[in-house]
Length: 321
Image 1 (cartoon, one colour):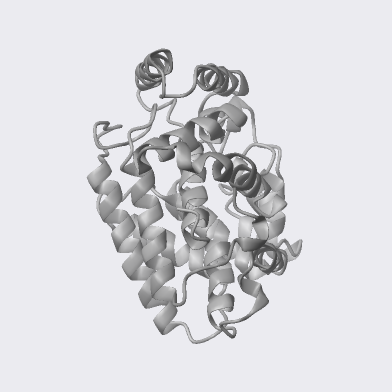
Image 2 (cartoon, rainbow, N blue to C red):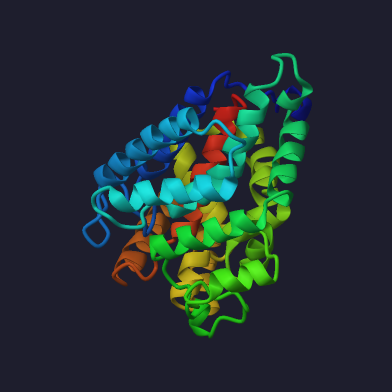
């Protein structure tokens, strides 16, 4: 097992960062996973080739954005620009919103590190996350408005009645006066994620400085990373571990908490049977996939897939994989 103090941020340019992002995304959706898009799995007409194409377009758009933006990068505006590119790219659907949201603070932290001296202490694991937390906490009201515009533009699912219940937040994305409310109440991007953290695990990464992803990487992934025979086996096991630890937010929002917990328990059973490394485990994975696909996309564990991608991205950034 690597000592946490030995984990050093590897990229030396923003081009490296965007190539690494694209690679992380491709590793995620190029692996077949229960209920999710993959090489052998199409959901509502969306193929993994579509996902790859959108990811590549995002990579190019992000490279150009950083070249053209000479001022301090706004996290909210960066998110909006990426979402706009996604929604303008065929098939003109919200395919990678979760990837965009999760990558964004890490990308901006990466920019600050790359612009610092090569021997900067910012490159170690602890200081990278201190910097990420600083970036999230220093987000502005303007960032909050750009985030709102991005979510509206993406037509994100399950926002109106998350878990089948009316939204409790005072900051309903569908409210025509949402921007005025954000301005009058001085709500930052971080504040808005605080509002939605109850029903969204991606929002909780912002409120906890990616604690779930950090803990999973350090305490579960690194100790056993040499046990996986291929990258696809690694990705599937990351996905199943995340699914077993937290009810999927997208399944919860589109259905209800009990449905999300039911899927979580099935993933826990797979874990107890050594994931896909045993015949019993493989049969359980097959049956879970069959069950989730029978519901016409309502049981798509999209948040789990997004978190899988960002864990892979973190591992690439620090040379873990």
